[in-house]
Length: 111
Image 1: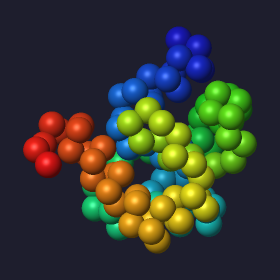
Image 2 (image 1 turned 60 degrees about the vertical axis):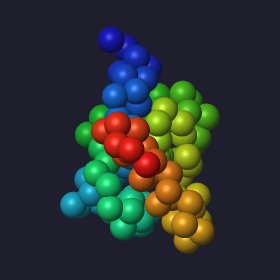
Image 3 (image 1 turned 90 degrees about the vertical axis):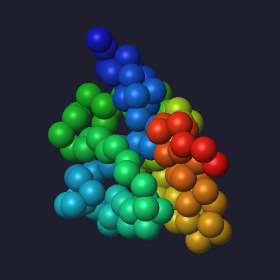
Image 4 (image 1 turned 135 degrees about the vertical axis):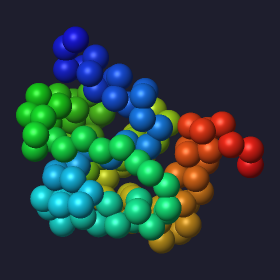
């Protein structure tokens, strides 16, 4: 598989996916740390990819997503945005609903 195919597979297989620097327990930049805090506060599990450990993904994803920076949050196959957008959505209460809906779809839970 080439890098684009790997990215596409990750996005399809993980309904809530954060491409970030570091890990949720040990973020390697402040923006990734803030994104993790907002996602964690939503109370659902999410997948992550440490782009520092995956240089090919780090190089290709910005072109694929047409989004130049990290972190990047993908929910149900759609790019939501980076840190500023994640925080804005969280403050408006939109992120919680989006994340809860994605988790329910993943586990086929009734509303």
